[in-house]
Length: 155
Image (cartoon, rainbow, N blue to C red; front, side):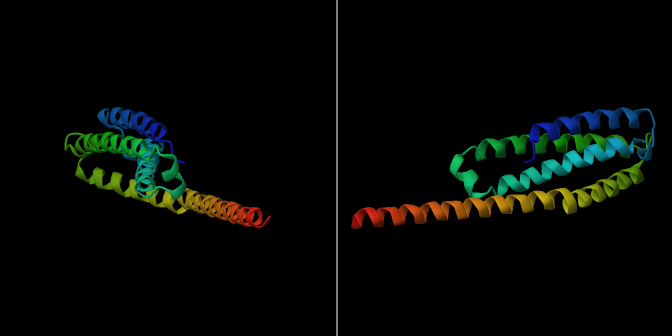
């Protein structure tokens, strides 16, 4: 499961570093690690949003889905604010220029694609296994209860 608080805190830390680096005139390539950290956190927030839109059936039984959706919503708004500020800062002609924003977007898209192909795919497979195991266990318990009631009724 993706921790929204951890993702937004990591994004904020990377954002602060990127902002300071851009202000002092560092090139985006020099800030690759922070750019990757920021993009990873943004991808985590996107994935958490997708997961909150379609929660697994067993989480609907326990509740708490609305609180998670609100947390994702707030993180999304904060991430959008950071993205807008970075775009303005990077695209400013006196600092780096619009072409650097396109480079930033390209790098971020590559990182998101890699993360989606590897990390999120593993999480989806794990989620499916949990859903199937929980479903099978509930089915076995239901059949066991039904057999027990039939046995008690005949006794």
